[in-house]
Image (cartoon, one colour):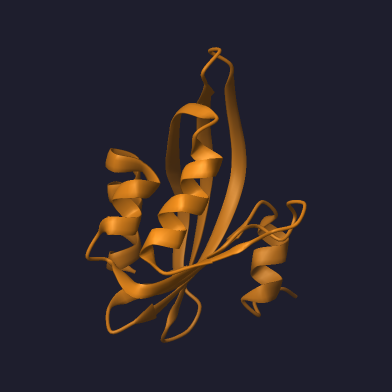
Amino acid sequence: METVRRAVERFNELGFDGFGTSDLVTDDVEFHEPPEQPAPRVARGREDVRKLSGEFDSAWEEHKSEPQEIGAVDADRVLLITVEHFRGRDGIEVEAPFASIFTLRDGKIARWQAFWDKQKALEVAGLSA
């Protein structure tokens, strides 16, 4: 869980670019866009992750993640529940609930599955009732 906590800190300091270039992710890291989005994509590898996430964040002046809950799903996966804070280039501010499942390999993030719907994340993690 410490790797995920540090990844959130890095993201809040440096954005997706800092996440993609950090020593906290594997070279073949995967980022799965939220399935609730139209035509969700999967980025594979550091550069692909930086490119895809950069496209999303280019619309925002600022994007910060506020952790609400973090917990182990199993030996290799961590569930993170956050509130995402966005400030648009026109000054509009938006808050949105968010959930992520991180899969770790050798102490690094190998897969990041993102969700706008917490219940969907719990279902995918096998934690829903």
